[in-house]
Image (cartoon, rainbow, N blue to C red):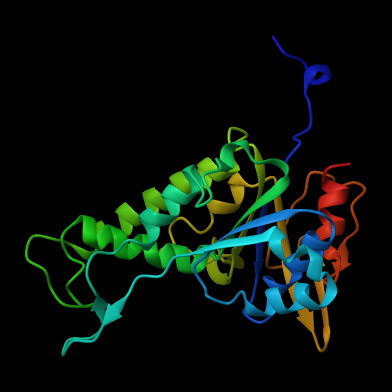
Length: 265
């Protein structure tokens, strides 16, 4: 039977990186590029331009260290509201990319100098929802339109289970690379307290998602100062594998690089 003396610290960072819109989460990835990491981004938000522009200014020789694959379902308008144009493919396409990247490499074998980035869980969740509607034959129905024989909660349940399976996979040691999952914050009342959790499909799984991550950090903005917080606030629970000796917060400019260095030391 293994004892604590036999336990080895993880060689990978699995980080849930949350914060309100506009706090600089995506742009702060630049410090990791400058620190020598290779980013492989599942891009659901289509907001990578500020990151690329920053790296182009600060470390132009490292631009090739950023690769991305974009996933966004196409929509079209109807008298009842927008619907998917064709078959929803964004979510299942991203699952294929996690298994085999566009360049033929295998994410589970990328190793310690690569980082799989999901940007963001919020919009990935939306893609999972539309995938679930398509799976149940309802993608061509606008939101709120009754569908005979199908209950709306079925879409949510299917999408939620798929998303939780995705989170479980990317946080497992079998995916032998670093992972950053970016998410926006939703404030939910539980047991008489209001707490912040990552935005997902509905509210049911949002409180469960952080439990899969050894590290949860918060992007914050106060005036012009932006920081990455590692210690819990009154409304958002955070954690990291070096809680006794990691700084309470880092300046966002080089914060993620410093976080990784501290977490892996």
